[in-house]
Length: 146
Picture 1 (spheres, rainbow, N blue to C red):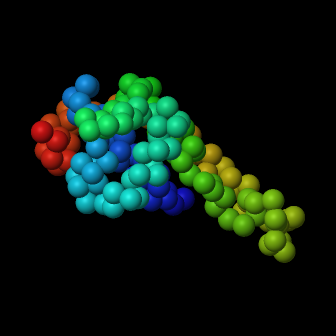
Picture 2: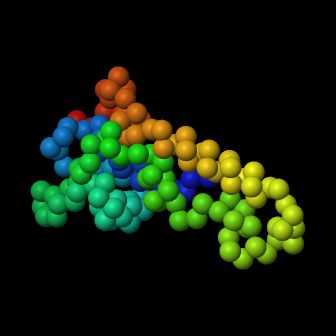
C-alpha cells in the first residue's frame, strides 16, 4: 500500500495544528515552511480538510486555521479512507477486471484481506496517538512552532 502525497500532507497539517496552542491560528505558509513543502500543494489539502470538518479556516488579515475536532476524535484510518482517491491495490479491484485470470485468481482475495488489515490497523489510532503528549515539546521544536 502506498499513501499518496495528498494523504501525507493532510496528516502533516493535522499534526501541525494539533501540537500548537489551542486558540492560535496557523497559516498555510507557516505549515509549508515548517515541512519545507509547497504552499500550493497545501492549499487544496487545507480546503478539503475544512470541507470535511477536520479544520476550521478563518479568512482575513488575522486569519488562519485550527483544528475543528479534538485530536482524540480524529481517526487516522478514517482520514486515510477519506483522502485516498483510489484504494485499488491491483487492477482486479476495479470494475474493469481486465486481467485474464481474475475469475480464478486467489490474489484478489489475499490483497483485499491485506488492505482491510492495513486500514483496520490505522483505525485503531487517533491524531492524539500520533502526537503523544510526551513528544509534544520535540514536535514543537522540530516544526519551529513558537
